[in-house]
Amino acid sequence: VHPRRATLQHVAMGDKTTVLFCGAATRDTILLVPKLPTDERGGKIVALDCRECAAGMATSAAVAAARCGAAATICASVGNDGAGAAYLADLAKEGLDTSWVRVVHESPTAVSTILVDPRGERLVIPYCKLLAHCASPAQLVVSAYVCSSLTPGLHDLIHEDAAKLSSIDGDWPPRIGIGKYNALLTDTRSPAAAHELLLAARQAAVPSVLDGDVTPDLTTLERLAKAADHVLFSRPGLVSLLPADVAKPLCGSLNTCAWSWALRSLQKRLPTAAVVGVTLGEDGVVWINTTEPLVSWHLRPPVVHVKDTLSAGDVFHGVYTFKIAQGDTILKAVAAGCAAAALKCQTFGGRLGSPNADELSAFMATWDWASSSTQCCACPAQSDCSFCDKGLD
Figure 1: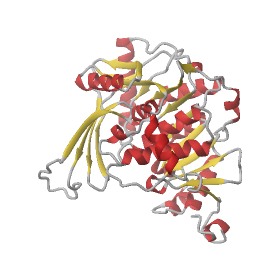
Figure 2: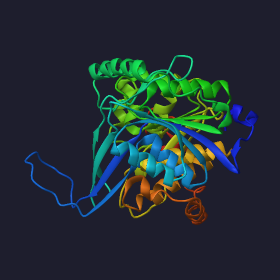
Figure 3: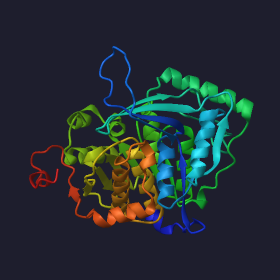
């Protein structure tokens, strides 16, 4: 646990732990299809099932935390349209505080269509048009919803659009009192807002978590990572920040010592981070705790029958952040996040499969998660490695 965490006073909304989430807001249409498209000839695929829900990285994380008992607040932007109204209605049903969701006029809500096959693999087709948050520098600074596929040129256009929206709609939102929250999670989709909140959380001694996915430019991701306490990268997010000689051995690698070495290499650039880790899907999570400088950890997730992997990473981040907010150890928070993600994967429908507190507790009681965790080293290669020789890779 981060040293500053011990000084944090418990803050509760009623008897609940409070967590603030900032980032992506989308309206998803999820289709179960017999198989994913494999060529460019076109044609028709008849869907076997369909779900619609409010989603996005931070949004799905917030719902996951709320279902497990958190008092979750979401800070995001939607358009003044049907998709935006449906987004807000969905989150109201989940019990989230949406008072900091801004409705942006003259801009549509981000939407995605996701195809999921019977193996649980997916194809995501997002549509995100110039959707921005705006605020004065003294409050929350200008930020933009940025899809990871946007080019630098479009990134510039987004900031031009943000300036236009600011002149139309004025300041938003009011100054956020970050100190009333037990933890903060941000993703990379509203980078300016995320950075502002991360800095405010650090000043207020509120633990912060970054869902470190890829960004249009590498400086944005590293800037956010340097401001967060717990930096948990996606596989491509981590690789994007690594030098070529470190990243090359990771291509297609499941060797946890190689990932540990990569984390150790990057951690030197993130001196204030308490935890630096990477989520590896069905291969679990590898992380280093800076209070244990010579030790890296790997947790293998529970084995389940997978129907849909969509939003599994978001669910992990949401539950991990909630457990950190409650003061749990890093290992227990990682285990709870992995368990919640595994349960989610057993249900078709993206984040709709997130478990509630009772379901998560019952599952954790049957899974020997402590035995599923192992220490791994930070060796530069598989040779001459005592941990690799012991089969802990």
